Length: 177
Ligand SMILES: NC(=O)c1ccc[n+]([C@@H]2O[C@H](COP(=O)([O-])OP(=O)(O)OC[C@H]3O[C@@H](n4cnc5c(N)ncnc54)[C@H](O)[C@@H]3O)[C@@H](O)[C@H]2O)c1
Image (cartoon, rainbow, N blue to C red; front, side, top):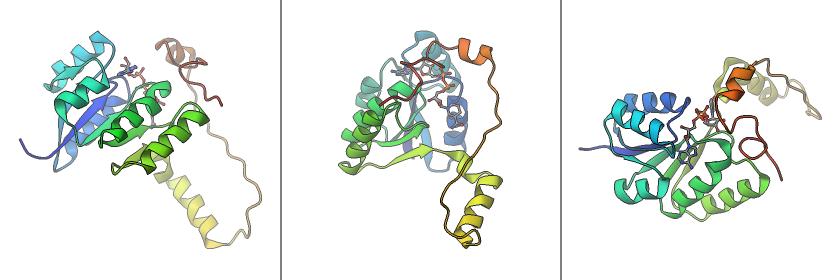
């Protein structure tokens, strides 16, 4: 088998987008999946036909991925990303970069000390509205920007938060210091 070896860590809702992207990329192939939940891991192994692992370190050890997609809850992003960077594995991590400032700084330091690359999913930067605002600010038409305010009109109902143990919790999802 040829192509860069990609692996997905965290096989929940958003991982579907990442699996689809890997499948569409020339020169890349899915080589393994990881999830700490046995049921989700089994479902991903069955769906994608690649080896599955219950933790990211055993996946890295066995698969030797060129790149991992980290799609776990927020509070595991930095820990897993640092472990990957320290082992020379390139990282695509879902937003947020980390769930605390301290963890974010630890991740930045690991990235600066690694030859591996890291990218954070902030796909909304490519939305037409974001691009239009960027163009307007870059044009200088508004002069010096001294303040800004933005509102995102998205709604997630109680079912979204209640359907996972980490969503909307202080330990799993809320940024701290
Ligand atoms: N860029 C976007 O637009 C976008 C959209 C949705 C979600 N996200 C981000 O993606 C992340 C995941 O969101 P989701 O809705 O898919 O969550 P989810 O709960 O549906 O999926 C997370 C998966 O990670 C697994 N997991 C938990 N800890 C793990 C660990 N230590 N090792 C391996 N697997 C582990 C869980 O068992 C679960 O299957 C969140 O950080 C969220 O902010 C980004």
